[in-house]
Image (cartoon, rainbow, N blue to C red; front, top):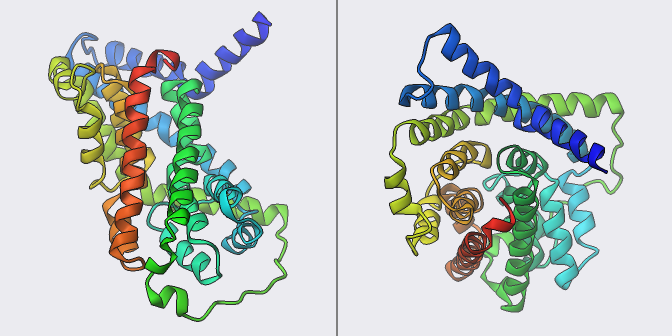
Amino acid sequence: MQVIKDIFIWLNDALLKMTWLENLINSLLTNGFGMDETGYLFKAVSFFMFDVVKIFILLSVLIYISSYIQSHFSPERTKRILTKFKGIPGNIIGALLGTVTPFCSCSSIPIFIGFTKAGLPVGVTFSFLISSPLVDLASVILLASIFGWPVALAYVVVGLVIAVIGGTLIDKFHMENYVEDFVTQGPVIVTDSVEIETTRKERHLYAWEQVKEIIKKVWIYILIGVSIGATIHGFIPQNIIETVLGDNNPFSVLIATVVGVPMYADIFGTLPIAEALVLKGVGIGTVLAFMMAVTALSLPSIVLLKKVVKTRLLVTFVTIVVIGIIITGYLFNIFGYLFI
C-alpha cells in the first residue's frame, strides 16, 4: 500500500504540481540571471513564469481530453437526456451534465434558451446553468495541481450541491412564469432525432480544434490572472492581505464574493490569483468564494440572462447562488484543516 501511495505522490508532483518545472525555473533565474531567491522580484518572476507554463501545458492536455469526452454531449443530446428526468432527479442530472459540457457562463445562456423552448422544467435548466461554468474536468485537475485533491473534490461536490439546490428552489418557487415570453412562446427548433455518429478521427480533430479555440479565447485572461497573482505574491505585504481577507476578518468571504461577482474571467484566469492569495495566508474558503463568484456570476452572463428572464427570477437566481457561495466560503474556512 505504501508503494502505491508513493507512486501516486510522485505522479501527482511530476504531472500536476510539476515540481520539476518549478525547480528548473528557479535554477534558471538564480544561476542564469543571478537573481536573489529572497528578493521580491524573484518571487514575482518565478511565480509568473512557472504558472504561465504550467497552466498552458495542463490546459492544453486537459482541454483535449475533456473535449474528446464532451464530443459525446452535443446540446441536442444533452437536451434529450434532460427531458427524461423531472424534479430533483432532473436537477441532479442537469447539474451532472453541466460538468461535462463545454459551456462557459455566457455561452450557457443560448443553451438555456434552447432547453426552455424544448419544454424542460426551468429548475432543471438552472441546475445546468449553474454547474456548467462552475465545474468541469479541466478546472478540477488544475485545482488539484495547486490545492491538492481534497480541495478539488470538495469543490466539485459543493458546486454540484449549489446547482441542485438552486434548481430545486427555483422549481419549488414556480418561477417558470418569470421567463420572458419570447423564450417560452417562440417556435421550438426541431432537430433531426437521429444523431450522426462521428468517427474517432473526427473526435480527435474536434478535440484539437477545441484546444486551439479555447486557448485563443482565454490566453489573455490567464496572463492577466497570473500577472495579478505574481504581483500579489511578490510585492504586496502579507499583513495587508491578511487584514483584508484573512481569517481574522469576519467579512473576508463577503468581500471576496462581492469583489468576484462583477469580474469577467473564467476559472483558468482566477486560479493564479487564488494561488497567490492562499500563499499569502488567505483562508481556502475565502479564495474559493472568490473563484466561484467570478465563474458562476460574471457580470456579462447576468446581463445576458436579464434579456431572457424577468427581474424576479434573475434576483432569485443570483441570491440563491450568492448565499450558496457565502455559506461554502465560511464552511471551508471553518473546516479548512480537513482539506489542506
